[in-house]
Length: 241
Length: 177
Image (cartoon, rainbow over all chains, first blue to last red; front, side, top):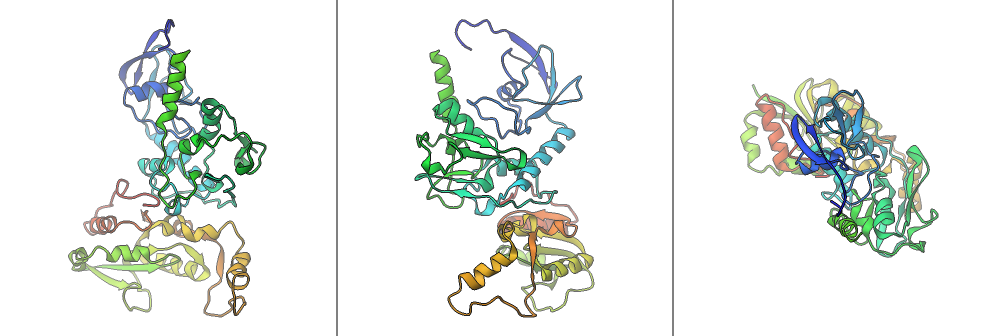
């Protein structure tokens, strides 16, 4: 809690259990604090929340809508339900659509067995994808001396965009296009290796949930990722203020 | 009565069949209960009238694969998609974003040093426009992911089926395992 603030405590129910939390917390924060597992892809501790992947949706008693837990603030007396057949159904559907949208060939991926998408696919019990795969033609950018970008494996979570802007302060990454034509770009949609703003810090590579961003010279399953530093840096900066 | 089992190899690398054989002596424990009626591992030439369980390795990539899998489905009580190629088209599908003519031309003309010619022989089945996972063509009853699935996973799945149970493989395997 920031020093000297007047943040109040609120009480609510998570899956029928009474919990208390600070009023500035989101449903996801409270669930994580209380050991309730909610699947997430675009969320990463230390970065801003954008509610893009929709995997973390929960039900709130009294409303028919589903709420993204990462961007929904808690309110006094709210009752949150995190595991229902309806939520399971939608979470599986979202993951299957992500798998179908680009070319996630796990068996030949640099991030095989170190991938959030693959992990959640297993965790959510996906043994096959029920919609036809799109097999889009996507490019690979290997112009950077140390890193590479494989659009085939990008899920547009924008963790790279946010970590570069919010933690590194370089804002190399952005998203161009809309919907199915959206893609992450560097600088003015130019090859990453020609970017004048990239500091080669590698933060984007480490926060990427899949094999879309990787170190050069890594083979199948060799790309491990380090992510704890994001929350650490974000917290230290908060403490300084 | 023994359970009639068939295994089929479509567009794959045979790694799933290798993993199947990798069960080693455990095969003997199920051998008493099954009869392998059709497989690349045995010498039967035609697919039987009806088998209890057919295990399919590989994706559907050619007109031959397509005809085969339709026939197999019609003559199988339970159809299992074994391995990532059968489940999600995997490596064979990496040609899908590229037109078939371009792929064949690249392999047999552009990159060839001698005999630069497109392969045309009646025995060669034309490639389909896109490689498909098995369940996009016919109904699949059980999916076993992995590239290849571990021998333990395959053994567990078959042993469970032989006991009349539907195997739960969610903790045993995944895409790319």
